[in-house]
Length: 129
Image 1 (cartoon, one colour):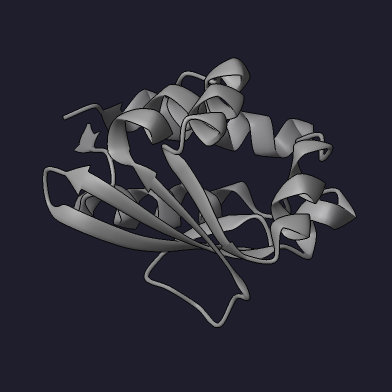
Image 2: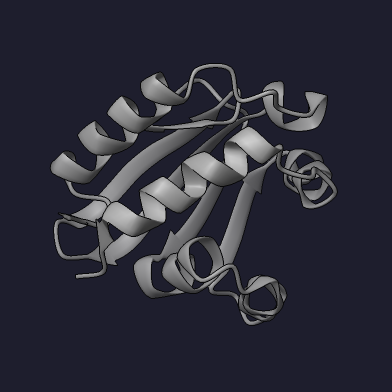
């Protein structure tokens, strides 16, 4: 198991993603490009990016950045609590800088079967620090 958002975790996500092959992503997700700034992690603040449906360590040249604290991200991403996403946004725990339309478009994207399987493997190897 790897601690969420640690270097080891990102390396394992890269390996699992490569093993998964074609994720058969819907166009909205396949064409996405977002930066993610996560605060209050065990390793300090962590920058990541979602590019073409794949999470990578470090920022990219995206026009949109999501700012979020680690506990809120865990509730949304690892536990799949979409109600928490809306509550966090409304209470200011999630801040969007840039093109809000990109984030809104992702809300309607349905993950593929392949992507759901990859997510299960990532969840299984994730230790929540």
